[in-house]
Length: 226
Image 1 (spheres, one colour):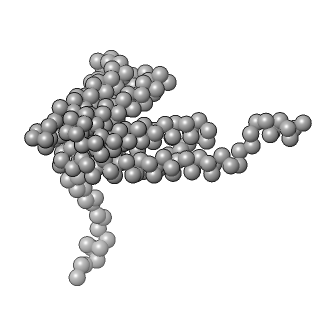
Image 2 (tube, one colour):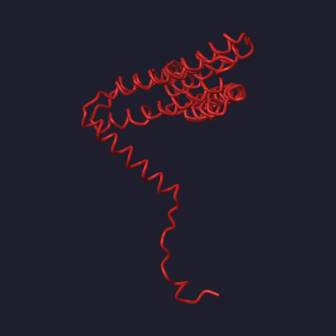
Image 3 (cartoon, helix red, strand yellow):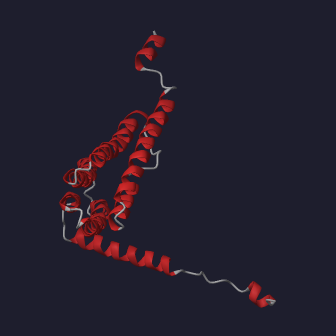
């Protein structure tokens, strides 16, 4: 049984190795951001490099064959992980160098859409070369639905200010694509993305519909004032 001294003694925090790893990664990321800021690199260049790296992953997907699929998809997964570095640092470098602009935000958003589309286009090419019509259609549908998830939010936020509902956003898609690529399980991943992206679009449309029911159109307001 514990004595009184042990019960009243202050406890020291128990830091796990995962928290230590997280702090180390944070310090490393901050160091990289400071180095990039000192180099005066334009944040838009980092955004463009992210697009280039994702295009490289798309090429790996599209050039795979039935014999090389596992290896090429694994390489593509590693490349997509590397592309995440540019997603992490471009915004931070922009803030560190006081280069946050509205065009930079637009360029980053457009680059993300092209990056998403390029990955699924690479998969579409892979399935087309293998004459797998079902997954050609599925890859095309996932490519469109991924863009629609982002478009629905952007269009909704022009009406109601904020529409962050729904699950299948870009980070979740990237994680699923990386898992599918590294473990050669892309087929079920595409079905999951297709279903959840569609549900996210529907959820955002319904959310926007409920938020706009109380809004009186400008013409009606003018009529009431008259």
